[in-house]
Length: 339
Image (cartoon, rainbow, N blue to C red; front, side, top):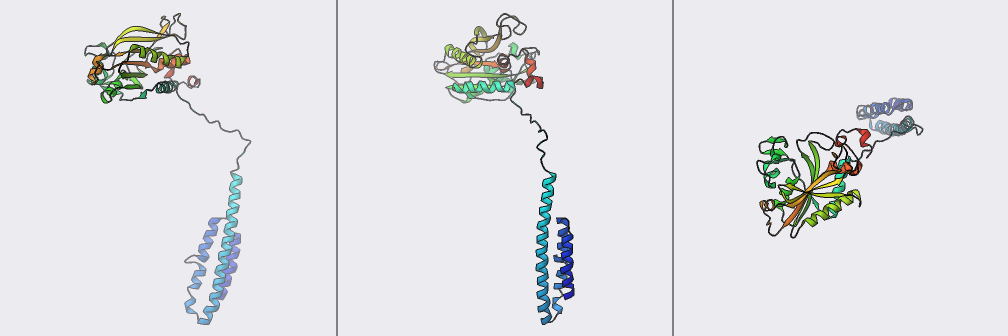
């Protein structure tokens, strides 16, 4: 048994030294020190020895085990260090190689325009309201004082999902929901997508974006509306921005007005983009109709308000000097990179 222990000592030292990987070393550990290893097998035979022999063989066996474990640990450390150095050498970064450019995206011009308008109105004390894009006939028409025989209800102008459900044609539906659930004073804007059955051209699209606003309080007049919209336009386009108010009719406001801005392409002379009018329609506005207030449970004898709605696409076109709305939807990288 003494001879066997000395052989294990010599053989393990030789094999540990010749080992070239951590995986091979682990196999040798199992071979000599595992539960079924050679050294363990010898120790299990200790019970067959006499007391004197157990003392001598036990001391030798402990010495061999200790030496084997120490050599194993030393070789393991050497192999791990060697493998780490090899890995560092093979994975070395070549700083002379050109780097890969990271393409960082940016906001779409419509999104950037919406964010800027939100910031302007929040600076004037407005809050943001939202609502569903698929609306009921009631919120899209009836609550806005649009009668059943009104042309806006025709299928040629509106996308119907069912007889009583439509894709909203304006975000005024959000204003109704706010007035039903909140008592004056009310100061909100409602940005979002809207849908109308329009032919696609340089200034029209069946899907576009709106920002509508609503103010309801005691003593609200057309002067408040005009001042609010002029402040918005000057913040967006500068102090020299020219706008005009034209009398108009909307079922949900009375009196009503169209607000136009001077065509940035022809400077008022008339061109294809402005249809030779010199101005481009930007938004509709007016004083909230008393019937709309009453339908929402607001006493029109005490409260008054104004509302307006503007298209984000046309606003962005004015800001970025874009002459065709279709460019905003074609996702041409060459065009979008300008922004």
